Length: 56
Figure (cartoon, rainbow, N blue to C red):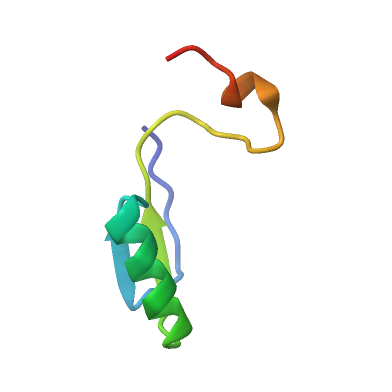
């Protein structure tokens, strides 16, 4: 795991981008809040078939 120092400040930090986290992110960001989403899991590149078609 890599920890990066950042001077950015957020109003809300959401852990996980599943059904609940994704909807919370959408609603809060549309309300004007600064939202950060923290996600665990392997690297995913939507433009590459190497990460999409990878056997779990």
